[in-house]
Image 1 (cartoon, rainbow, N blue to C red):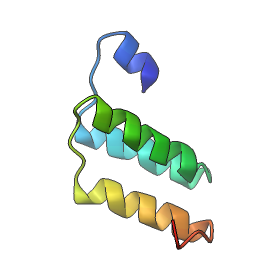
Image 2: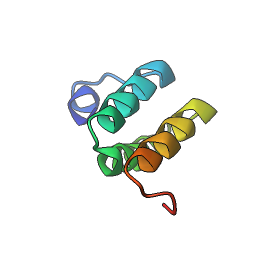
Image 3: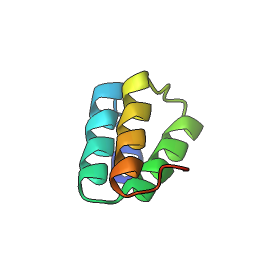
Image 4: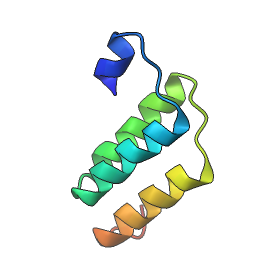
Length: 66
């Protein structure tokens, strides 16, 4: 996503959710959460799906208290 932003492209929520899902599927949920923070700081409003993806990702990794 950083590369997209550097090149002047701003992802929509569907693209963003796909990135989150891919990271979580790879077991990189903490990185997905950092991406959430970055996107929020850039003004992208997250939807319920984004948070659901993160909750499921953390649950799969056994981090239910996150």
